[in-house]
Image 1 (cartoon, rainbow, N blue to C red):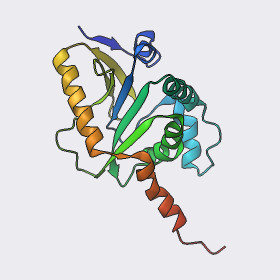
Image 2 (image 1 turned 90 degrees about the horizontal axis):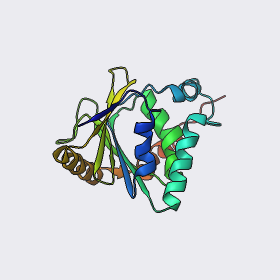
Image 3 (image 1 turned 135 degrees about the horizontal axis):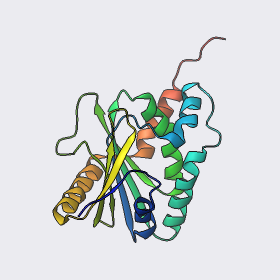
Image 4 (image 1 turned 90 degrees about the vertical axis):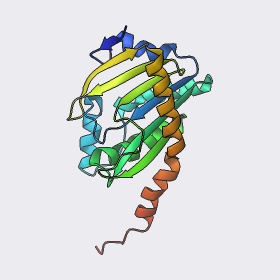
Amino acid sequence: MAQRFSSLSDPGFRSHFAEFQRTAFRMETLQNYDVSYERPEFERFLSGESRGRFPGLEGWLARVSEGTRRGKEFQRVHILEEPLSDYARFECLWSYRHTVAAGEDVRIIPVAAGHWPEDLPRQDFWLFDSRRLVLMNYRPDGTFASAEAVDDPDRVARAAHWRDQAVAASIPFPRYAQRFDDLMLNAPVCPG
C-alpha cells in the first residue's frame, strides 16, 4: 500500500532522508519548480543581485555534507531543456554548484526544447537504497502537489532501471557548468 504525503515537511516524508543507509537518488524532470523556501533567492537572482546567503538551501547542504562524511551517497539527475528556463539557470548557478561542493553527485541530461530522452519518464522521484521509491507529484505551475511512497517491488525495480539509464545518459554537473563559465569568460565587454 502506498503512503501519500501532502507536505515536504511531513515527518513521514522526511523520515526517508534520515533512514536511508547508503544511497539517495533524485530524478528531476521539470524545468520550473515553484518552491516557497527558494522564492526570495529566486527573486534576487532574477533581479541580477549576487547570491549571498541562501537560507532555503543551507539545511540540504548540511545534510549532504554530513551524510557524505558518513559514507552515504547523494545523486541527482536533472533533464534540462535548452535553452534553459530562468529557474533552471537559477538552480544551476545558485544551487547545484554548492550542493556539488557539499558532496552531491549532480548530473545533467541536456535536451533540446520539445525533445525528451527515450525511455525516461516525465516523473520526478526519490529512490532510497534502490528499494524505497517516493514519487514526487507537481502541479503544472511547478508547485508541489504530493509525494507517494511506493512499496510495489516492480515499480521500485522500474525506477532503479530509469535511474541507471539516466545516470548513463548524463554528464557530471561540473562539466555541464563549464558551458556557463565559458560564456562568462568569452562574453563581449560592454563599453561603459
